[in-house]
Length: 456
Ligand SMILES: Nc1ncnc2c1ncn2[C@@H]1O[C@H](COP(=O)(O)OP(=O)(O)O)[C@@H](O)[C@H]1O
Ligand SMILES: O=P(O)(O)O[C@H]1O[C@H](CO)[C@@H](O[C@H]2O[C@H](CO)[C@@H](O)[C@H](O)[C@H]2O)[C@H](O)[C@H]1O
Image (tube, rainbow, N blue to C red; front, side, top):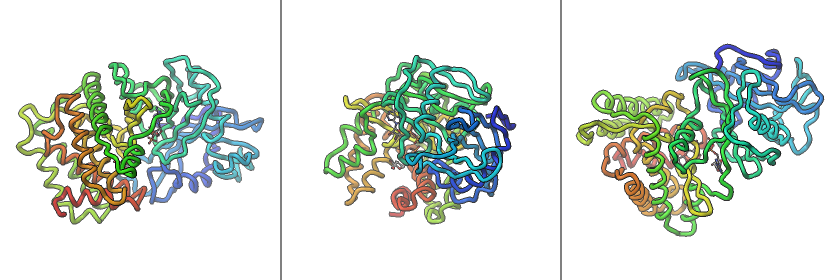
């Protein structure tokens, strides 16, 4: 991402007049990571008119803005967000819910600004740009396939970390919201996987980015839309509600995870974690726990017990050659899996944990990290269903590990200390995630914290 402001045709003067509107609107967006801290200012990274703002029709303004907030000590710089703003003189009623506000001063005074992704005319334009690779100001559009034109767009309205547009049920364009320097793993890993012949991910067909060389930041990725597919979370809840087992699905998911891991290990560098490597891994988990306990005081009584769980991962179980580490999904859960009508499972959203800095999300880890994420997910599903069905979750967990072992040759249960440490690390992450985004869900990971710390 360019460090200095770069402005194409849209004048930098636009930002001050948009700031009062954005200050209100941004913190209400699900993908806004800085919730709970006031927005104190904005600085422009780049502004690009994807459609002219000359008032002759709807305009589309692409902005990369840094959002200043007090206490961003945990991050090296204020977070940068990607915004696609529609600008019109009058907003038709169907776009009412997308309204951000009316500009009071500056070059756009009197014009209405709204979430541009909700406007099919503007969403069309993005696809059109991806069909014709090239640059526009600081933005570069790249494609690898001939894309059909005029596919009706719709914005997915579910709660997400990013925003996704579906075109004609044929493609899905994911628009990243919080932008950091470097390639997003949600482009890098699916490209590596499909390059290695793995069929468990929808292959990226086009993308857009900004910046140069290794610092180029991915802004959006277009992939085939798996029409009629249903995500694992929904299917698991349906099974629970109907009193059905989910072990066959869990087994298939274990196989799919193993295939992804095998292909990632073949396509990208791996390393061995031993000695200092294992101590670093444990230290990082302990540090995460301590930071989490500061943010969510309910964790404090469990810290000594959880610390022991992490320390055990560097104990006698470590194999002579150390733990094998590789690129992993990083935030694997049931909602990141899609099952198509023929029963085949795909894995999506390789971005890693959205709150982590990019360098952290790209760090190689033992693959049990993903296994632990999925095991937590079975627990989540069972906990969110009344009555709580712990045995259902336990059977899913076993079936998943068995499927994984069959396809990879390694049973994750043969590394219990490491698996437990990663499960604990995930539960700690979830506590912070739920406290920030869905406080009603906090009891779900807290129950796991209690169990894993040995206090229940
Ligand atoms: N290739 C795809 N085919 C069908 N649906 C998809 C596809 N990719 C994503 N989705 C749907 O979009 C939702 C959000 O995608 P995801 O990559 O998880 O975004 P986010 O990072 O915003 O959470 C998923 O839960 C899934 O329902
Ligand atoms: O937005 P993402 O899908 O990238 O992931 C974030 O949100 C997830 C919730 O939507 C969160 O997952 C947690 O809740 C799930 C149920 O909604 C559960 O299946 C997962 O196991 C649990 O971790 C995920 O942690 C967060 O990064």
